[in-house]
Every structure is written in C-alpha cells, then in structure tokens.
Image 1 (tube, rainbow, N blue to C red):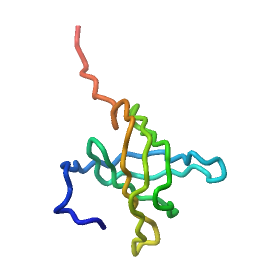
Image 2: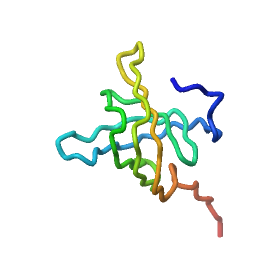
Image 3: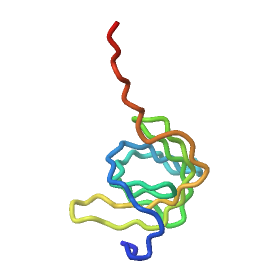
Length: 105
C-alpha cells in the first residue's frame, strides 16, 4: 500500500458498491466496494486484479457518482480478493444519495 504519510487528502471511511468499467471493451466490467474515499481518490475491494494505469469509468450503485479513474495500485489480500487504489478525475455526483427527511402534514 502507498505510504499514508504522503497522502494529500483525508480519506473518509465509506462502504459503497461501485461498478468499474474499463474503457477498453475487451475487459469486462466488475463490481467492487469502496473502503474509503476522498475528493480525488478511492480504495476499492474487487474480486479480480486490475492492471496498473488502467483507465476506468466508476459508477456508484447507491448514489449518482460518476467518474473517470486510473488504477494507481492493485494488491492481493489474504482473502483472495484485491485492493485497488483509484485516482479519480472528472467526477460528478455523490457516492450516496442524501437521506430524505419525512415531513408530517
């Protein structure tokens, strides 16, 4: 994992299901779950490895976030899955939908 001391942005722990779609059609899309997020990055757990510098479209399955991303690291975990660091760009929307308040009449 990259050195946490050099991190420029604070990461917020957030578990959100995401869809990761390669810009290259020969690679199938896969789903993952974020561990933490920041304005320009996310750490995602996936079932398959992703190549370094792979370009992706990221979509939150809970909110309306859409972003381009670049894979900055991919490491295997003991459980057999992978942790992937994503650098986000051209981001729009939110990871989760805001909770609605119920108003009584």
